[in-house]
Length: 87
Image (cartoon, rainbow, N blue to C red):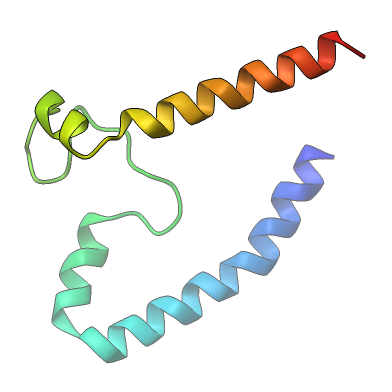
């Protein structure tokens, strides 16, 4: 089922991504070309740090309240585990 879903996703979403990429190239030209050269089309590149060469900044993490996403993810996992256990 997972393979079928992944195949269908690529079959449907692949042309959408290419069309959007074409529109962005027309609209932004060289600016988009530079962006597209440094950012993968679908899956993120797993590197040691951001593309700009900066290292992880905990002060920015707290300032931008990114911990809220981590807390929401953890709460969702706890909810799902409890839901499975109480069935």
